[in-house]
Image (cartoon, rainbow, N blue to C red; front, side):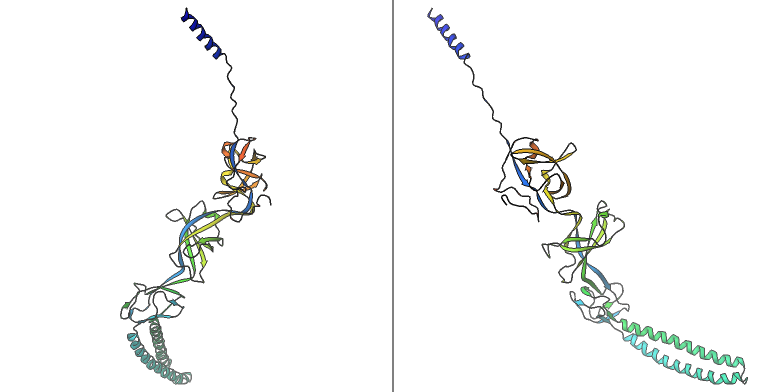
Length: 374
């Protein structure tokens, strides 16, 4: 009996517990946190870069026209030389001896010509008066013509020898810097090896191989930026001087860029990076590239107004690195979502939390941005 009463009491307790109403739990929705950036204005350009090396604008190998033993030289590697300066000399002793012999022969033949001419002129009167026959006159004229032809031949020999003797003093064909010297006093100079190499570095060139997709974006006379870190942290200005009309075996088109080197700082062999600008825009609206969303054929950004995200279609322009030009759709007083934009929807409440006290700025060189409160 007692056991039955206890079971009834326990059942009542369980029944009462089960009838107690549960408390309703309300989940509070938390706004997504985003970061924003002000729309800025600045300059932007699209470009592509290629690597190359500095080379002299001209390189001339000097070989003697007269082979022979070197009797002296005047310039070392690294020396500057002017056009016409004597680089080295070749022994001309044999040529000088030949010239003296030819000059003596020339003088003797000149006397023969003078005598034959005098004789011919004297007999011209006799021939005109019929005193001598035509055949005798023709013999005299032939003697004169032969002597004069011999004199002309000897004159040519004499001039050739004089030129060869002059060529024994080998001169610089251009002004520049000596980059190689391959002669020594007593060595034999010939046409088989350059005796000197001269570089014209008053201006230099950089050659780069450009792809077929980009070659038609370049024109002769274009100004390009050339970065030579060995010389300056800032790019130098160069001009496109030549564009190859056909591709190389590597499938690229050779483009040459000329740079002024009046200060002599640019050395052949230096590494260079050439930057070609295909399009540019000044004082235009710029945003970080990641802020712009392209989806389902739409291009848009999210702006924040009173903590509400608003979807705004935009038209974009030039892309450069991490930045992109905004042609239309925004104004400079708007705050654009640059972090968290892929997780929000149009009209959604958001919480703006920028890492700095001021509004996050777009890191664009030359951009003009007003601080908050200005």
